[in-house]
Image 1 (cartoon, rainbow, N blue to C red):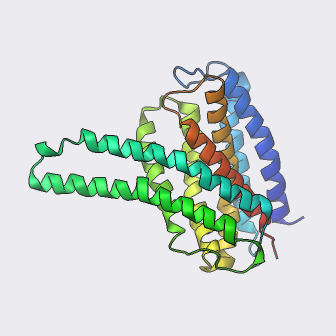
Image 2 (tube, helix red, strand yellow):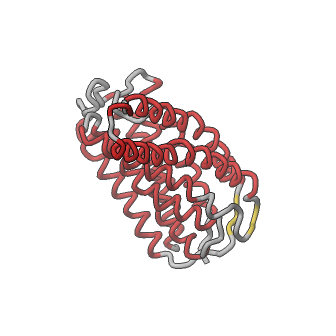
Length: 280
């Protein structure tokens, strides 16, 4: 059995086991007022290490599988989840736009001197690029992926420059989320969310590299190496958020419902596109 076949089996098994355990813990053991575990026993203790072991195993198996077929078969599930990711990105991005506009209102620009004013406007402009422009272009990127990547093809399918915008958006979101989560008000949700986004950044980089035709053969290996651990962690984090919202157990500092839906579709997209990668 090849390393890739073992990795595929682990992906399916880990999503089933960890996803089920996470929903159980969210509905029965997480205190919605604090986000800390209030019960759950051995399951609460072992859940995150178990998910980490699965993710680490798939990461190592991806490194051990040296070569992949340079042509990628883009299946219907891959294209469907690309389309759903584009749709789910719209309300999630809208949240970021509202947050950024609220930050501008709080800046009180008339109280700053010329140098401070320029500095604050520059920071706000960088934020505008990361939280407004990059998400909008990301929607277009995933739409292009869904519409143009069909059947067995060689690259490129989309513009490599276009593929940088989802990476920029998620890198900025990771930084902002990590800074906001230093208060550790929702430990279980936050740790899982941050771990998934750490794998998200290199996955999106490899995804853009593959679809943009930039050394796609090497990019396919990176896509599988980072994509499968990201798929596991993103799906577990997302279904926890969605389950909490639907059951009225949402934690204030946890990711929003729209964030949960977006990462669920993006995690399923990662699982689908890495499943389409065939070892040589």
